[in-house]
Image (cartoon, rainbow, N blue to C red; front, side):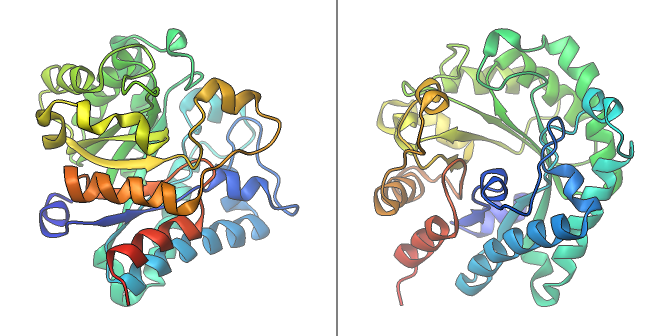
Length: 304
């Protein structure tokens, strides 16, 4: 992973997965585990495989590396044990992702699989977050399952609180794998608990014996970073951004009756600015994004 980041100035990551699945009349997401159980259903495996493969194809056509994450954001120990599904679901999902990568025989070295976890509670309510000690204990089980399944790296996404992020980092650093911590931020460039992003990164780094490979932001519009106001040192550690298609903040998005998105070109130009001016290498999408967003990045970066 470190070599991939050093070698390539731009790396693609997936756009929205769950949101795309919700739009399908043939797919039923689980109320607790969301999309992870789809690997046990024929139609679910097909839908998941098609979504990921479409994103992979965009990267392959552009000659870019691709990072994709296991659909295990909500498959923590508590939720898995409350369900009727196998306690090995994280392992089974990882095997599904490895099989998908294997279909792209000539590009396997350019496709990396990240074992994804999320915070325990609501990702938009930082007051519900675990303490660092609680987080280290709570998330270890899922992390170990993903490692056993054979992921290439670990990633914790949509983290609203620095304390839980620090605990997750402690759990991840005990493995042999590189790992990434991804925060959700508000429109002022702060983590949702109010901590400035640069300070949040410093806290996690300081409290980790083996530091993360890097940090990311996800589930926030690219302008929320307030890139020009951030200290320069931030960009030594910020490696990626998975951006929402909407410039609304999280409360407004939750209360919106209709999906609100900005134009693909506005979104894409802001993302490319992060890459070209600030060296943020890993670009992908979150809520409201799709194939057209990744294609725009590729087309503008490598015009025909």
